[in-house]
Image (tube, rainbow, N blue to C red; front, side, top):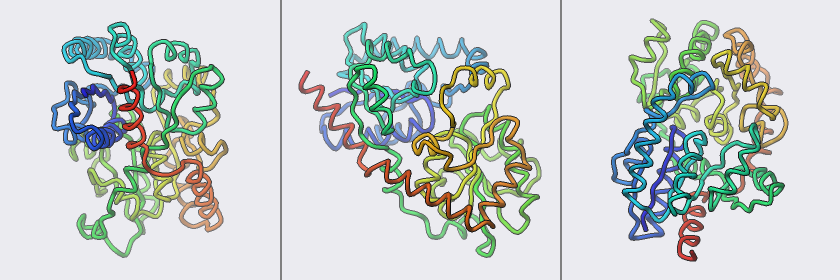
Length: 372
């Protein structure tokens, strides 16, 4: 069968690549067209029509500033979708873009599969009515989403969390410290500033101050694949902080604590059992609008899934070098606080279930197409 898969950001690229692998294993005649990143390109053997680095715009103001680019990307994908005429289009998160594609595909008789539900439970819940009209099959990765959709009489499939797949398959590099010229005698503090330019430039300067505040530790940045080292150097200046690329799991497993920008990485950090503080800082106007619209108590997935404060969050004005330093200090030196965070991770892990989300999703997509 022919699959058209669309992911608009780095986390979607990871999950898209794992889904492609699972589809290939279960459908020997699988063909792929992709909009995604380098991982999806490598797994599918196809060049992305549009790369994720050209698509990820975060925040209300940022989206408005890039409306022409978004409109162009939509037009390109719609035209290509009609040329490809796949058996199904598989949309991975990225709702602002993907729900428009779902509507278009549905109108043209193309089956729509949505993998990783939009976070409509957080804000603009009325989008559920559009989803019911334009999405044929929804595959959820967060346990509480099933109950949310049930309230609207919309049947979804819960497949488990694909991060468990990615992490369980990863072989930790035991030589990570030596490979990157790090000292085996100093503990590492990991900085995960995100994958979007607008996030990194607001948040990384606050994170990087940990270099001065923890002189007996090594501070290491997890670089996003769509940027190079020179970009990070332009933000942190002359600070002798290492930047490592494509090795975030290895960096986390060798770290005593982490500062993590809100997003998928907070969940990855928790699954890898690294005590963390979650941070976020965006355009003030975007944040002001979001605070009026968003209906959830937390921003990190760890806290949202557990439904209580499991890791501390420092948002906007609270996201300062001083506050970050205070929380990292507690995570490193306060044994009781550190143990409490790890206990919260145990609760989270029990809620996520077992690995296998990619295989389960592939199996259900294929079954639905064959039964159609």
